[in-house]
Each structure stands twice: as structure tokens, then as C-alpha cells.
Length: 108
Image 1 (cartoon, one colour):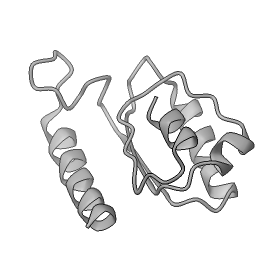
Image 2 (tube, helix red, strand yellow):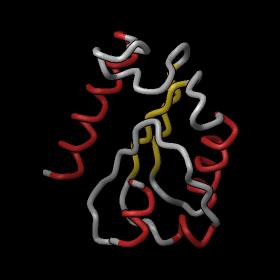
Image 3 (cartoon, one colour):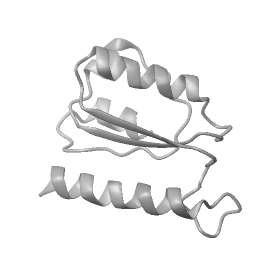
Image 4 (tube, one colour):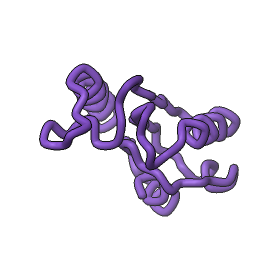
């Protein structure tokens, strides 16, 4: 959903999709995204195969778009939620710190 919002609203200053599946972009879709991206994924998330994450990352690179795609080892879906059974503290803390720094950089 985050990527689709960025396609629809090209004036967005920054986006950060977290472990989102269901996005199968074309080069034209990616070309419509102007916002820098910090994408957060868990390596063991069954909702989005890592091959799909790599495809999205490749399309961003080929389009010359700013994208930082983080794949956290041993982390699954919702690894940032301490009330969820998949919580991974080290990954969650690192991802959160990166997201805060990312938004401070692009929204200030």
C-alpha cells in the first residue's frame, strides 16, 4: 500500500514500507515514485518472498531512484511488534532507529 500511495501522490517527501507484500511493480510504476524509500523486511516473512523484495530493489536501482532496502535475518512478519510472537528485538531497534533518522533527514 505504501508504494501505491507514493505512485499516486508523487509529492510525498519520503516513504517507509515495513514488511509489506502484494506489490509487484512494473518499471513504469517505480518511475512514478519520487520519494526516497526506506523499506524494511524480515528475511523469514512468509508474506513477501525475498526474491520479490530483491526485484523491487532492482527496479528502483534501474530507475535511478533513492532506495534503502533492509532485510533483517531471522526476522519474520511484524518483527517490530513486541506484542506479536515474531518480535525480534535487535532487528526492531535497528529498523526503528533507521526509520527515525530517515524521516528526520527527509522531512526536516
